[in-house]
Image 1 (cartoon, rainbow, N blue to C red):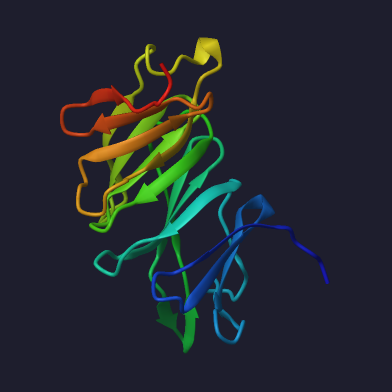
Image 2 (image 1 turned 180 degrees about the vertical axis):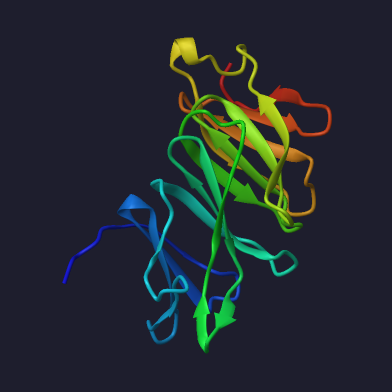
Length: 193
């Protein structure tokens, strides 16, 4: 039996399912209470996304997609809600074209299912979570983070549950910024003087 290294483990909001991402982009979903493997692809093999997965998160119930995954090499994947065929439950995934050129290392989904991804090339992408299409791209200005100075996005979050137009951005040097997503204005969010 081949052993695989688990890289990311997440549960859904209802704490019913356990999503595990293994190295080489392989994922599986288990019943959180019994541990039983539930969802694979239509051939009952683990789902294999072609790129390493860096982050995963479950959507809320109002979208056709169940999970979003950020991956190496500028890739983002959307994983369908469970489907049934010939008495078996299985999952499908959709790789998406996007503006990211380097590893996509951060993602977040707010309560309204708005998905945001960020990559090491300092690009932030906002997604339509109902069709898996990029809806907006924001390039970080050089004064916020400069690749020439070795600065890149490390983390993005919607910090307030009921405000989808505010995004927290953390740079790998520890600097923090708030992005007002409608106007694309950046505000410094540091305690340092």
